[in-house]
Amino acid sequence: MTTSRLGTLLLVLVAVVGCTNLDSATNLNTAGPPMIEQVRMKEIEYDATGQENIKTVFAFGTHPDAASGDYAALGANTMITAPPTQQKLRIIMDELLVGNFLEEIACRAPVDDDAYDRVPLGTTPDDVAKCSAAKDVLPKLCPGGAEHSVCICHIDGGCGDTPFGGPVGVLDVNQDGAADDTRFIQGAVGLRCGSIDVAIDLNNSYWNPSGNQNKPAMGGFDALGPAIVLQPTTNTTPAQNALPTGTTCQLTFSPDVTDKQNNQVCAPPGGDVKQDCAPGDVSAFQFMVQPLSVSNQSFSDGDTGVDATQPIILVANAPVAASTITAVTVTKGATAVAGVMVIQPQAQTIRITFSTPLTANTMYTIHIATTLTDVYGQPLPAPLSWTFTTAP
Image (cartoon, rainbow, N blue to C red; front, side, top):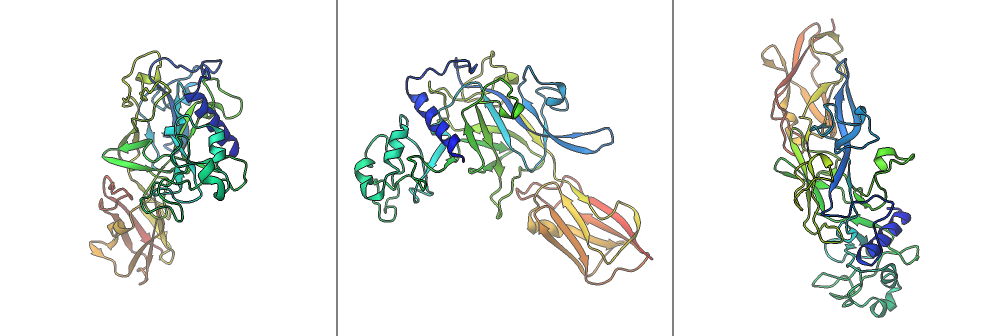
């Protein structure tokens, strides 16, 4: 999180709860509930040869400067098919939201289950500066019972040598009187794919209160704002930027994510902010995720002259659950081949080697059963197989 964006965030927080007029040349639509005007994200498209291409499009909403190629392959406001990995959504709003309910600031030590704390409404940069002071003067400048004190201990047994309700202090290593970092709030905005609540990367998701509907020369459509940038992740170790394959997804918003009039977010039909939508209803925007698939990187189905001494590499379009790679088997005719070793060197890679040399000039088949799943437990939709004949 850059210092400039942190400064912008704090200024916006003050404006939201103060008397600053937010209606200006920014073209924000402050009437009614805050609406999702557009969503930018990656879509899978196929060219005339069947080659798969991934590009960022308007998955929801329209823009007067956009060309047909800036929208989904099937046209504006049609449900897109999204790649399962490397996804990041830019959710562009028609007005400012209250940033206090979207991001929290870094503290010097854990104050609850982590070292981040929410900023109370009405908190000013001066309040944050007081809570960034040296430890010995914190209790005086940043008393725990004060309405606008931040980074207060919420742990019953205390936070180290700070008692419950006392100030832990804002993380301010460079001593500029401002927080060194912010982080997206868990549960503020999410993704539900089928019945799965996808984890959100809190460090790489953020609220950007700047921008408007004017397409800037730098950044283009991906600089429209104000916007929530949302990056999914997994609960695996290491975490992966991945969505559940073969599902339909929609956004979720916490009820406390509102504009300054306490209206909840909604999504109007097609992102048309001139139409009505019920506060809290964002169901107008949905997208599909590509089903789990596996490609053979070593040879094409039916190839001959395959070098039996080289490993066979299979690549999935999403991280695969390690416990399910037993779905990969090799046969000669109807007989299972002995000495087959199947490992997963990377999250999306399956490697097949043979401890016993394969017979020369012989046909073999690689099988993948539908018991192979992604890390969310979403299965391969249909069995796969490739035949090959070893070299003489």
